[in-house]
Length: 372
Ligand code: CA
Image 1 (cartoon, rainbow, N blue to C red):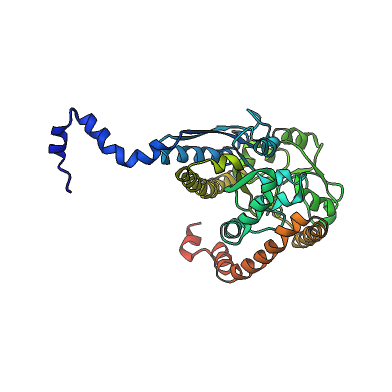
Image 2 (spheres, protein in one colour):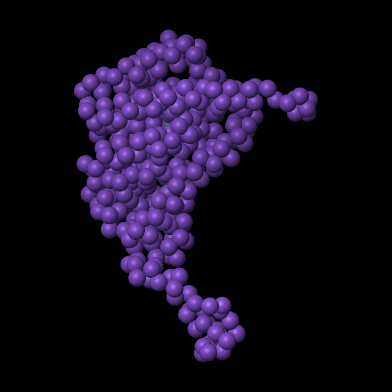
C-alpha cells in the first residue's frame, strides 16, 4: 500500500501524532527491550586521550545505535576502580565492563599476555586476523571464563616506539645494569639481557628520568610520549618497541551482564566495539607522523635497536615462552596455536606486504624527491 502522507495526516489529530504513529513499527522491538545502564571502568587516564577515548567511542556508538536505550558511562582510571583493579572489578561484577590491557595482569597468569601482545608478537593487522578469524578470541575467552569475563578487542596502538634513553645503546652490553621503566613480559626479556626493569606509573617517569633514578623508559609512541616531555631529559629515542609490536586493548564484560543483554543490544555492542577497535589505530596513524616530526625538530635523536640486540631479545623471549608453556597449561593452550598462526601469517606477509612496504618507504618517486 502506498502511503499518502496528506490523507494520513488529515486523519490524524496533529502532524506530531502522525510522526509518532509512523515511528512505532521501527521502534517497537527497542521499546519492548529493557533500558540498560552499564558502568565502564577504564585502566587509562583521560590524558591518554587516544586509548581512553576507545571507551568513549564505544559508549557513544552503543547509545546511538540503540536510540539511547543502552547507556555505558565511562570512568577514568581511579575514579571508581584503580587502573590495575579492572579485572577484579569485572570478575566480581562490581562494574559490568572494563577497558584495559590484558598484559597488565600477567602477574595473575602469564597467559594474560597474549591478548594485548607478548614480545616479538604480531603486528596490528596480524593480531586482528588471529583474534577475529584465527581462533585467538575463542582461546582468550576460554581462558577468561574462570574470571567471569567475556572479552572483545577494543583498540590498538600499532607497533610502539622502543623507549627513551639518557645514553646511546650501541650493543647488548650497554644494557647491563641499565634501569629501564618497562613492565610485564617485556621487562622480563630486558632482564634476561642484563637490564633492570622498573615498574613506574606514567606520571612518575619524567622526574625519575630527570634525576637519573632510571636510565630509560618506554611508554607508547610519538603522540603520547611527546605530551610527557621525555625528550627533554632522555634524548635518544629507540625503535621499534619489540615488546609491543601491537598493543591491543580489550573490553572485558562480566559474563552475566553479557548474557542478560537483549540480542539486539549484543549486536549493537559488537558493532560499536569493532568500530572502536578500528578507530583507535586510525587515530594513532593520523596523529603520530606530526608528533614525530615535532620531536625530531626539538632535537630528539632517533636510533634503531642494534639487530644483534633484537636477535638476542627474540631468542630470550621464545625461551621464556617455552619454559612457561612447560609448567603452565593455560599459557601452553594459547601459546602453541598462537606460535603456529604467527609463523604462517608472517610467511605470507613476507611476500606482498613486506616487499611493497620496504620498496615504497625507501624509494620515493623522483618528482617527490626533487621537491624534498
Ligand atoms: Ca608501551
